[in-house]
Amino acid sequence: MSRKIRIGALISGGGTNLQAIIDSCESGKISGEMVFVGTDNPAAMGLKRAEKHKIPSFIVDYPHIIRSVNRHPEPANLPEDFSLDEIMQKQSIFSSENDPETIKKFLRSRAAAEAELLKNMTPFPFDLLVLAGFLRNLTPYFIDRVNKDSMHPRIMNIHPALLPSFPGVDGYGDTFRYGCKVGGCTVHFIDYGEDSGPIIGQKAFPIEPDDTLDSMKKKGLEAEWKLYPECIQLFAENRLHVETVSFPGARKKPYCRNIVLIR
Image 1 (spheres, rainbow, N blue to C red):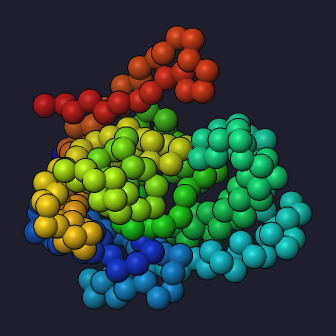
Image 2: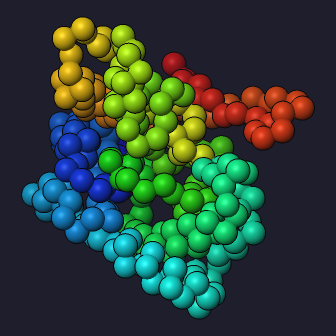
């Protein structure tokens, strides 16, 4: 690919993976350039990294939007193109055991915040959106407006565990407490579930008897800083192909999507 891909990033914290991606773009390891950095956290240290590299950035005040919508959930405070029934049918973050009203409340408030994200992203055309420590679950409302073609996903995430084991917010902690002898990290595309999208790449490392949770996390971060740029470069080279595998008779998820690497 001769043209550099345009990469947008969403962060919530320090942005060490963001820095690894920026450095890889500047060194030529990634055939791309960072075109914006967005966050839900005005105190995110990653904003200083963006400023240092002269990358446009923006903040979306998730807590304020969520409180506002929860107090006044009428349609006037929601995106005009938001369909609660449609999003309820698509989402798979929550199970059927969860309270439907709680799910609806979550989806309404998050879609309002995501509409603000999309509005702030509009001035910056991008080819790939990377989640670099963005601590918010994305709903189908947002995902469908970024992934125009379901067979060509373009929202990438890094997770601190060897998926499908230990999804959720504390992958390294869950791995360590379970007593695993091997830890790792996973880069995957986002789908409607929690850390359930097609896996692009993984790196593993041994967990030694004298490792602590902190030393394990250090190993994990070092692996992340290598893996994420490698997977982004595969995207830049147009080497990631989505393959759909069907499971006749399955109830919940009658298919899965795998990533096939084009050699």
